[in-house]
Image (tube, rainbow, N blue to C red; front, side, top):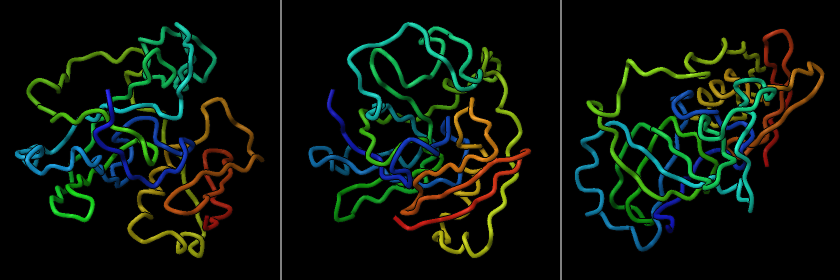
Length: 223
């Protein structure tokens, strides 16, 4: 398989990316097609769908070996489950699957057709292998059981960020950043209240600490 497109998102690395698609609906991203696939006809009818499935590569987790069991972050990294019972990026074939909302179809741009989406959980530059429409009558299964991930994650963190720091973030990215921080970007097994964490977002490094259920932003530095 070859990539048909790449994602353009606000995350230069995987730290900080939401653990699942749709957790932070305010996040915006764009799907930019490779030259051979910049054909408007290939997107005919796509604007009739509100959501899309993206099949993509865990391009930052390429490796020559794999393990039949992994430690899901949802279980604190302390319990092993079969790799096929998880969505771990460490797989025999590093393929990811995400459902995103289609916000806009831009057919005529200098880079050819571009799809603008929201709720994506992909690192900037992630290769996309395929795009398929989400079909509600068959893809939605309200009666499905979710195993160890059957319920939504634990309550979100309270986020405190000084106004002068928030002002350094582009206005159209602020709600998305607050949503990412509320989801607790730290690895599930980290709980050091004195540790300063940092991740890239929208051209800046966001630094923060977490104590007693409150995430406090301590710095935003342009990169």
